[in-house]
Amino acid sequence: MRKSIVPIALLVTGLAILSGCATAPSSTEGKATLSRDVNTALAKAKVQDPSLQAFLDKAYGYAILPTVGKGAVGVGGAYGKGEVFEQGRKIGYCDLTQATIGVALGGQTFTEIIAFENKAALDNFKGGNMKFAAQATAVALKAGAGANAKFSEGVSVLTASEEGLMVEASIGGQTFSFQPL
Image 1 (cartoon, one colour):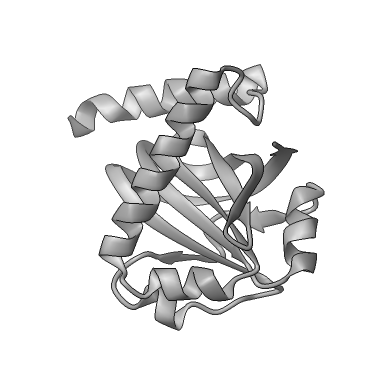
Image 2: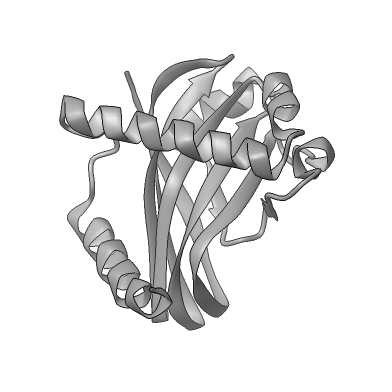
C-alpha cells in the first residue's frame, strides 16, 4: 500500500495545485463527504490525544483539514481541504496549498488542525493573510500534545500522519484560502 501512495500523492498534489481547486466542495454530496471526513479526523485525533478537546474549547476557532496529500521528487507540493469553526460553529471552508523545493522524495497524507487563539488570528486566516514556513510551526499530534500546545502569534498547528513515507530537507510554505458558508 505504501508504494502505491507515492505516485498517487504526487499526481493528486500536482493536479490540485495546477487546477486551482475551489476552496469549498461544489456539490451537496461533496460538502457532506468533507464534513464526514472532518468529523472522523477530529474523532481520531481525540483518541490519539484526549487533551485535544480541552485545547480546542479554549481556542477562539479552528480549522480541520482531514486529508492533506503531499508528494515530492525534488520539487514538491501539498493540497488539502477542510472546514473552519468559530466558537464551535462551522463558518466555512478552507484549503491549504504548499510548495517546496529541495531534497525531497516520497509521498504522504496527514491531518492538519489549526487553532486560533483569538478573533484577530481567525480574521487574519479568513482574510488570506496567513502563511506558514513548511513544517516550521507544526506539532505532531500524540497524547498530551493538546495540553502542551502553545500559540505563536495567535496560532497553533497540530498534525497527525496518516500514511506514506517522506524524506525531506526542503524549503517552502503553506498558504490558505477561506470561503464562508
